[in-house]
Image 1 (spheres, helix red, strand yellow):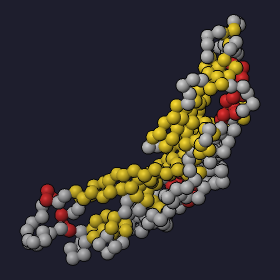
Image 2 (image 1 turned 180 degrees about the vertical axis):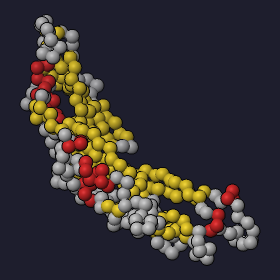
Image 3 (image 1 turned 90 degrees about the vertical axis):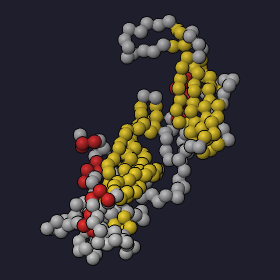
Image 4 (image 1 turned 60 degrees about the vertical axis):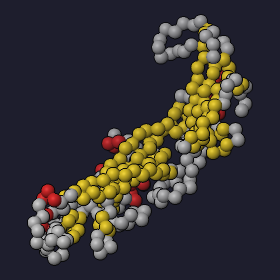
Length: 291
């Protein structure tokens, strides 16, 4: 570091948590040098792999993620501030910088991830959910008393477990807004990351704009973080086949009930199929709605 600084007593503070290592440091520098220190800590950006942010001493995988600047004392330099947008207080002494360090995302993952654009990366989270299905009474009999009547109140709701997949795509320069609109509410056309065709429903996307680089303290570059939510419904039929969102339980004929695919008079299924690979390709519009 080329700017003079000092570490304050009581710093650093380290945290060892189930989510990984993180730390906090408090530094002291001249008030007028604070921007230069911030740029040296995080000014080169927040890329995957953590090669530009300042590393925590002794931990190359832990990088500076946030910096807070505040006056160390209240020795403000008197000056006229006529407009709210044209000036700030100045101080004769020091700025106190509080730096938060976080463990960087690792490129290694056991969960398969979709191929993405160069310079971007994907993180993954999995949750669980379920839906219940009421089986038709006409399809059921009592095993030991086949002639006994099965009433609707006798049939329990069948619980079908669901897997909720969330793939978050980081550092997206141009989110594929049109592809998102086209694919939402569809199921996977073919196997997607090892998940059987027709069993993965695209449930929607969440997007937020993030600042990725401080080329200067007044010039911020930004892009997007896009989280895709998919719901996997994989019903295991008695013949060993796995079926999904377009299947329902068919009661007839009575000697061969089971899970079957629904189609209309034109052969169309309730859920249209689509390729999900294009969700991880840059779109042509830089902003939502194409403005």
